[in-house]
Amino acid sequence: MANPSKKKISKVVKGKNIIITGASSGIGERTAFLLSECGAHVILLARTEEKLKVVKENIEVLGGKASYYPCDLTDMDDIEKTSKLIQEDFDSIDVLVNNAGRSIRRSVHESVNRFHDFERTMDINYFGAVKIILAFLHGMIECKTGQIVNISSIGVLANSPRFGAYVASKSALDAFSRCLAAEVKGDNITITNI
Image (cartoon, rainbow, N blue to C red; front, side, top):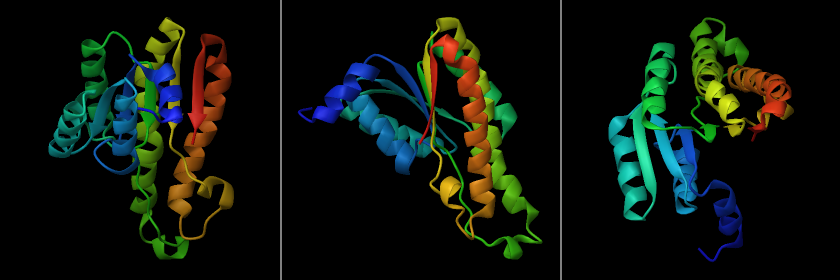
């Protein structure tokens, strides 16, 4: 771990319990590997148990600590059930990384008869993220520490054509996060949108 940026990350995350949603592939998987290399215990969430198990095993082969919980982040009851299991297994959650998401590349006029495009993106990109934030926020407030990291999109700033459903869902999460940040600043909880 001669990498100077990894040393900086290690100072912040070593020994911390960090939930990562969408951890079975892509950004979530890479984040899990990086944070575990830096000494965090990563708690992996995604729909597919087999993929989560592989990520967990690969992290452990490299000497990291990982746990996994299959969870459909579009199902509010499943999020609630899984959150309770995590709270039973861990004294505290230090960081929550909301990475799970769905992107639909389709123009609005092509979605006129596809309202479900908007529902599906809001379900995971906004409602699922908010539901899991609410599940762990109280514990962070009680501990007077925590960080919530939401993976957003440059599209929120750029108003990208053909991404109306996706950008709207990420914009909603960004707005919620800004409001929440003002409310929890006194509780030493940081909200970060990337």
